[in-house]
Length: 255
Image (tube, rainbow, N blue to C red; front, top):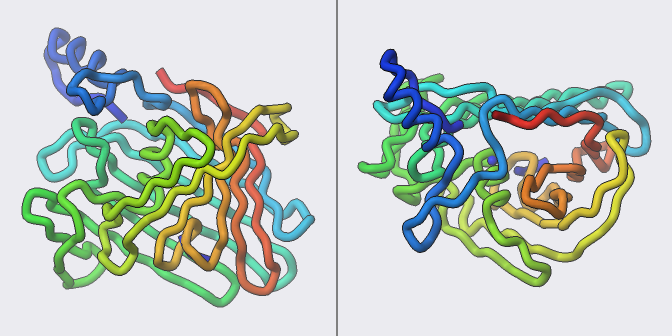
């Protein structure tokens, strides 16, 4: 199966106030700042199905803020857990998203899907276009000075207009082999999930690498058709079982 915070630590109340304003807005193409559809404290909880059977749970959340590489970041996390007989999925993705440019500065990927396992921790230096593996002695180059990873791409997608028929082709995945990342906005659809009934915009993300949103997974993300762009339904594929579905069962907005 293949497969994306805003705030600042400071002691002075005046600085904190200015940073809180920064936390609510993201850079727009014209240089102004547009309100983000997510914030620290946001959490979406999911029912996880393998095939047609409910087997576990998952969540996507913005945990908080941290300094990474001297920059202010939003720490986002995604967890998917479930099992059906010998077929078990236990995936965790974490991304530290730069609050100024909405790109990744650190990425953790821990995947356990049936017999497939992967564990990686990357720290990025966008200015030098390099990475360092924290779990082993390895360095290398990254494909962009505004890199995105599997999870931060989902958050980035939430800031896009997402009109049906749009195709976004982006060379911003941190590994060159994962590019280009293609986001196809394929339709609008009303869906029923445990959290209720939602009008959604369906996006197909394709990253040319192993992970939840990779080409082999044939994933679809159903974003709420409103200014929150909540991931209401996430569909992908896993070995043996065939399909994995995350259906929204609870949502808490950030602040």
